[in-house]
Image 1 (cartoon, rainbow, N blue to C red):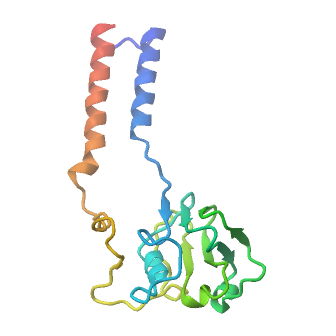
Image 2: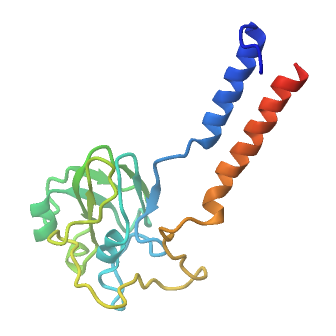
Image 3: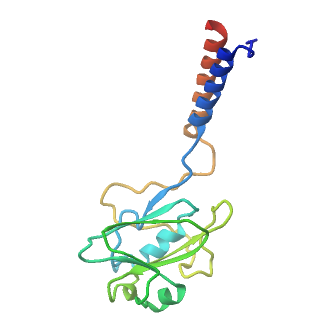
Length: 200
């Protein structure tokens, strides 16, 4: 067994522990491109509810961000109240973004309402409702919210396939890919421990 009373050995064990802890740390925030393959714009006739569907199939949490991509000369994004969202009132927005690469950071739980700042676009369903749960933040939008959609047997997002197929959301069952970081950490930890105990 290692003699941890030696300052040098204690420092090595402490460094190894910190390395292992940092190695397992995950980034807990995500950046979501609004609409996925569809950029922020007026929905097509083939997919008029693209933003309502998109929001329904994502779980948002505090620390996540929404990325709106659009041509800045043709569109913008505004954050509005629920009343303005429902009536498509573009006056007095909470936030106005118009650079074509607009990033909105989610900083607290609640409901967020967005629409295009261009006249007529909101009426054509270019608007987004996002629900962020408190606590762990892993909840879908409530069924009575503005983005509620009728449930269908095969309800899945239908985006144009311009860049290949759309990946399916990860399943809840563990996979080897999910266990790999733990396996690698165990191997590195064992090797570090062997080096500290055997060679120092």
